[in-house]
Length: 73
Image (cartoon, rainbow, N blue to C red; front, side):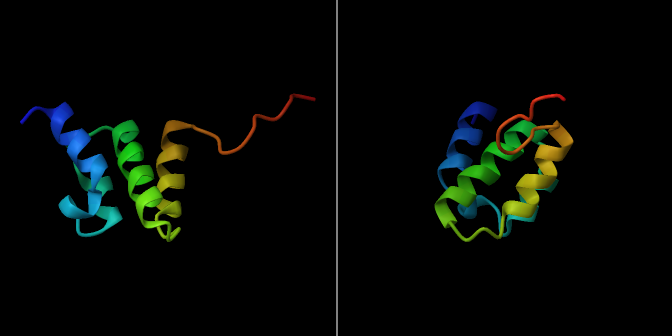
């Protein structure tokens, strides 16, 4: 199985591969951007909001801001 195929399969149903969302952060097969996509897919499927802190951690690593950009003063 290629990495792309594995990645696409995991995004379809992350809970099938990982026991918990925190396990995604420990998966060395993927970089932070790919881990973020997996967690966002998991969050969208579960809707529980429990994954939000992990998503925020990855966004901080990647320096991605939530919400609209602020204008400089």
